[in-house]
Image (tube, rainbow, N blue to C red; front, side, top):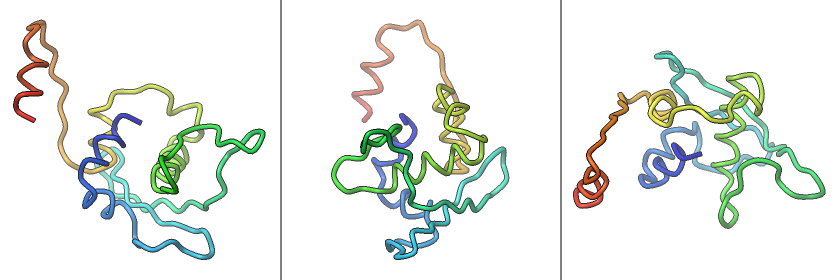
Length: 119
């Protein structure tokens, strides 16, 4: 989910994840993901897992559907929603976008301040 929030900072990146920018009346969506260096087209429907009329997993703000569809596609690639709990954000970003990503570990307490300053 943190990877999706990073992608949300760049709406143009969100558009590249979907084959079509339009809502499909049939409720079928093709999503472009790069997994383990291979480009994949994942097809999902708009049936969302719910319990007591509430969405079980991710929630969107407003009537955004893209977050829920992305999570569903990611769960489909991995075999279930249960298998996508946790993980490393840099690996997920790399797999979703196809762009390189790295993890940096630092014991410098000023690192976060520098990142915020650079943002």
